[in-house]
Image (cartoon, rainbow, N blue to C red; front, side):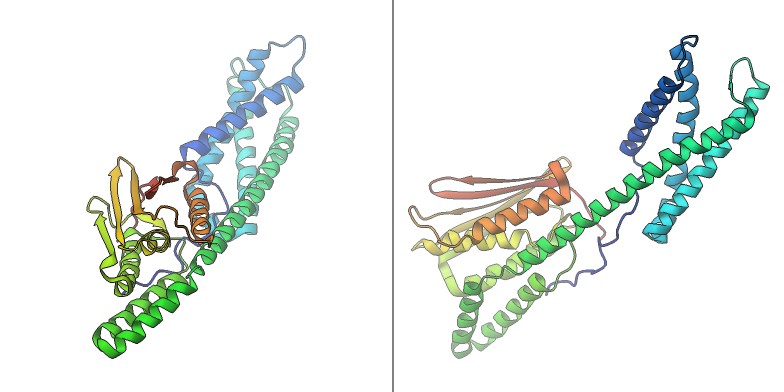
Length: 353
């Protein structure tokens, strides 16, 4: 039986970027330095030394950027639970208060160490300028985060729609053939017919009832094995499937409904067209922090299905891999004259047991 999937898994919406990540910190520091350069150029006069003015401005802005990033990193769990609008408002207020505190500290340090830290403005002017500039920068940043959040949300919805489209790709020919096979077994072998009905029920549940974006490799392989058993009842000795997957970690996460459609393509577009049938090989191994899974099948020379279901499934899997992994994963197809091979390569992500 197929294990039930958690409908809540991987459905949370991230409103803010991961401020604890090194890449996010690098981008923030880079943008902060660009802001410092822009402000220095705007206030730079002929009697001033550009590098000295830039160092003073950079020192203040980088402190604000680093402290702000640290605060957002500490508050990220609370902000995600607060909801989109509240998280943006809270972030804006927290960052503004922090900017004013840093500005006040900088002013007080100037009073004590005036020879090394020089602020030419009066106290009120300096605080007001800091408030005005930080408000504009933080507001623009919040706007960017809002747009980025909506973009990520649209990507998630698009991915879910594509998963639903693939889940709906149970081909009528497979369902009709399976029902005919079961009907014939009810007369000759009722016990096997009952098993086939249970297998078909599990397969339909896995294809139509799942809502998670990813599932474990174990679940994916179990679904594919159920499909193999049903097709084996119909094709008999014409169908052989060799599983060489001992090296694969079964807890690894993979986009849902990846292996079974590829196995279905191998049988429908390959084995069924061969008079004597053939063998489908499913193999996999771990390559450092990536996994590779290969599905290969013999093809009948000069024989091809007229349906485009093969290309549709391949395109769907490619798009979902791109959404899930970006440029870190690949779907490579090798179509020789007598052999068709699909190789999946994706990052290793072991979920909870």
